[in-house]
Amino acid sequence: MKKLAGLLAANSMEEILDYIHGMVALVEHDGALVSWNAAFGEERGKTGNLLDCFSEKEKAKISSMLGTKQRERFAVELGADEDQKTIFYDCVIVPFEDGRSLFIAEQFDTQQALQEIVQRLNRQVRMYQMESEAAKKIARNKQTEVEAIVMQASELSNVDALTFLPNRRMIVRELQNETQRAQRYPAPLSISVVDVDFFKKVNDTYGHLVGDEVLRHVAYQLRDNVRHPDLVGRYGGEEFLILLPNTEAKEAAEQAGRLCKCVREAQFPVGGQDLKVTVSVGVAQYQPGADTWDSLLNRADTAMYKAKKNGRDCWVVMD
Image 1 (cartoon, rainbow, N blue to C red):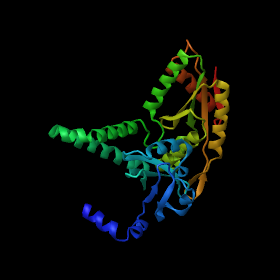
Image 2 (image 1 turned 135 degrees about the vertical axis):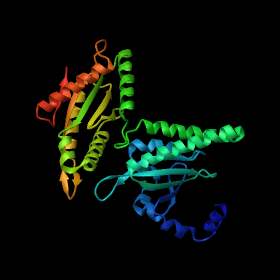
Image 3 (image 1 turned 30 degrees about the horizontal axis):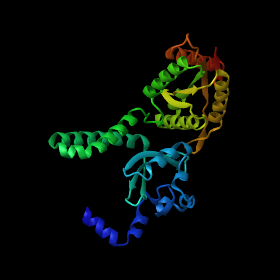
Image 4 (image 1 turned 120 degrees about the vertical axis):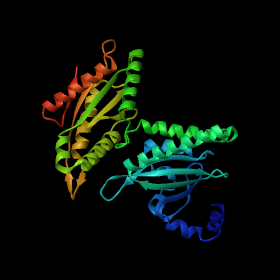
């Protein structure tokens, strides 16, 4: 590999990089773009800074990785394809001694790639564990890498593979934490249960692959139209759970109305036509001294079913 790297460094590296499909860019410690290949694109290059290629929610994470001496790997959303389907990339940031970093990104299919990443991480963990048993000196040198891999694997275990939202286990744990906080401090807490209307009909008519795509699009609409620090998670099937700390039921109801409108007006391209879907939302506010996390969840779920009975594409607040 070293011999190959030496030959490439001495012969037409610029031309080679432009033939690579993956995005490659050299950046300063603050994200300022120094140089990039054709796959990175002139439009992204014109932004002048790598951080401007990401959403506001992801900028802080990427910024914290730049300028460090540790190689960082992560998955990130970067734009959409011609069918308006979200594209995800497998990214790595390779640090250099002078403070600069090399950003490399390869596109992947979300669900299949996520499974492959988990499998690869588990294989690496087992390999490093075997090395530690064989040679403790080597194990000490690998310890930092092992901890990073285990951390990534732990994060992936809390992410829903279809929507990239927090999964049921993580969103319920966050609900438990928020109810404990609301009980301890005088701050309101509301939650919303969101269910996709007639989702079984979508699966029966168009197939499960289209159903999965609809769930992804609804998840992105919910995620992109809630405020910080509200948290959206996939609770199960076609049902989502939104946590709204420091929020009373009236404000949560206003958000529910906005979310219904956003989903209703969104475009879901399927087989050359736009598929329309709606959601029903149930809202409940935590009642200190009377509610537990599961009773709060049950009240929001009951409100959601009332919204279904009221004709769907609407919301109900449970007193």
